[in-house]
Image 1 (cartoon, rainbow, N blue to C red):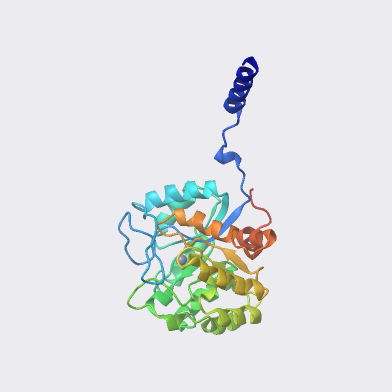
Image 2: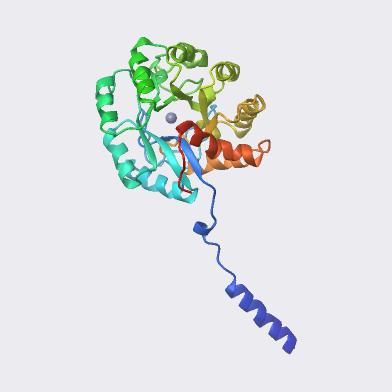
Length: 309
Ligand SMILES: [Zn+2]
């Protein structure tokens, strides 16, 4: 009896003394998010709405944030939890972008969201770059207005970005928001050929690797070694099977060093973690390939010497 009692006391001591897992202590390796939004691209989402999903019929999960300030606070929380040390941050409203930069200095590459050529105009942007307010260009989302990448109205933007040697994110893909002027046809990756031949030093990366224009995008990446791509919205907006098929095709094609993780987070910060975990759980990726997509490729693309761990 005494032996049993002693054993129980010992067990109780072990249980009481067992360290409680501290989320902060569970150190995650660093991640770079190459596609984050400070505010919402040109459509409204009522607070509490489920996340976007494709293809219909489908049901999005989660709940959208209450407002821009809520998006900021909850995104920073998720970034801390997943050790996201840098993010390419796109914003429609320059003041909102500034709020983010002030909330976490040195973490964001601030960048203007462009849905219509001319807004903002190139001269306004040039001054903003000179003043150090932006470090990237895009997302250029003029496909949402039916404007192709090769449209002459975009030419001065690419020329400016090439002269400044800054990263440029463009939405050239087969899917996007349900907007009246959105055109699938304006998102074919071969539309980028005129831009890349005119601007060979442009540091361009393409949203969702042009999903689902796989063959065109692979051809473009083979032919234009400077061209990079993110895997962002497709980590959560399409079925996981569709994302894995697409990702695996690019990795098997040998392009695993030119894909970069992005969350394309708009108003659903929980999707950032889901996207990271989609990469981490991909059964066909080696640990090295996962680190490349989540971090190493972006370090190289951005020309970062070192990033805080
Ligand atoms: Zn986006």
